[in-house]
Image 1 (cartoon, one colour):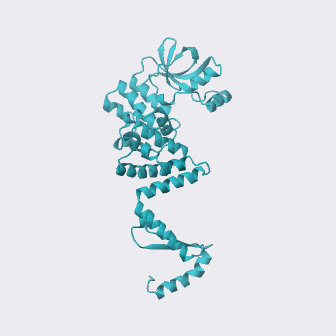
Image 2 (image 1 turned 45 degrees about the vertical axis):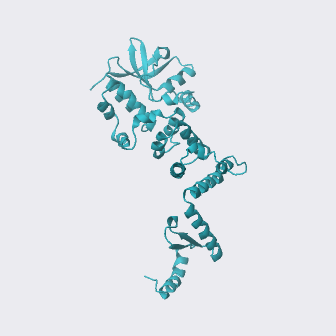
Image 3 (image 1 turned 60 degrees about the vertical axis):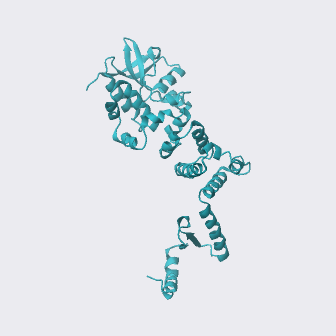
Length: 316
């Protein structure tokens, strides 16, 4: 399918935006200062994409922030990539996708919104085919259109990579109150992807076991005391919260850990020795690690260790 495509310098006053092709409705707000500064210095390096609406009228397809920057900087016209008025919807969508992904892949909220826009003009199957395979594979774990049920603030965090996609299915199952509360905690304690997953895993177990909610859980005095503690820094608060949740979730392993640490202290081990229990104390077996300053020290001491274990019949 071919289409007429050209680059023109267009008066900004002739560009309108009905948000027909907008795949960033969750990003509405002021133009980023860094973008204004960049365009002020070097101009628009990547022209906005527009479609001719009438003879001298154009509609935005992509590049709203760039156009707004030009307005703020007092420019009267700017270069644009222009699609002709008779361009088929599918071709407009193809140009929109390519223009948006020239620098980086679509974020999850962008992909969901792009799909929604495609579904306005194309049949269901054809709309899904507009997304490459890497986006379609995510369809197996959650339904893309459902993502747009999330609040704009949460969509923004997914868009900017502040929330890991691994927790998305859990957020979709939550009430708005619960998900906003837990996202607020993730924000406050600056939790990375692995800690976000761990937080959800621990909280989910406690919530289901006690028939409570995530919001109620974090209103309990023991956790509130940590969250509002004036003398603890963020890493200290984070560690303490995980300790409390771990203890609530696995009370037996917590007791076993405390007993193990007490016994290790009594052994008065050298600083270079470390004793490690089996995961979750599932077995009595423990392991001993020894830290050497370098390989030569290891070579020097290893024969004595081998001799010790061989003498006990445990050497292999």
